[in-house]
Figure 1 (cartoon, rainbow, N blue to C red):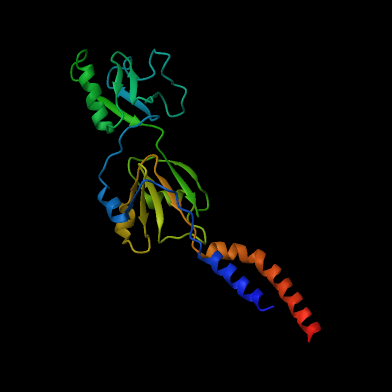
Figure 2 (figure 1 turned 90 degrees about the vertical axis):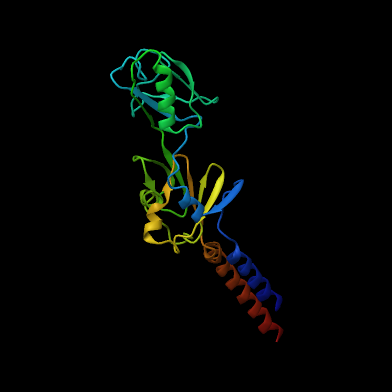
Length: 239
């Protein structure tokens, strides 16, 4: 008869100790390393949609007269970086752009165009710049980065803020298969706004340990109360 409270206690203990869900990655790092990477520029990769504007030469800019370019995208004219890291551009053909910053990609294209043009000016932009927010926020999902620099706090704001059980002491930001763990409660206001997100970052807000217990206890307590009542009833009969 006395085993029941012990079993119930153990069950509640296990439920209350289970941590929030994290996404597995190859590497882990802390917020200090993330802050050190503030000035690192985004590097182009496969599946990026880019625009390439050549000033004064609309015929050479993306989306002009070649059917492989699209001008129906809501953002404007663009071309996709393929699985080999290449983009095919008017006049110069296939160019390796994966792994380059937008400034480096522009310089590469300028080098190719210089064979045909005098002092060409090229501007490269990525148009499918999104981050993913998961976990304990009001509106998880994909969010477009509409500025060149976007802070973590701004993205959390777009997701309408944290839920009750959000664990702000161990937020997970995933970039290039590396997990950066951030304790928002220990960072200064300046540091909070210094953490910048990049396209394709995944921001995971885990739940506090107590969430699983609170959710489960709502189901366990009525059941436990019924069992306890039955136990008391049989105890009275036995006595």
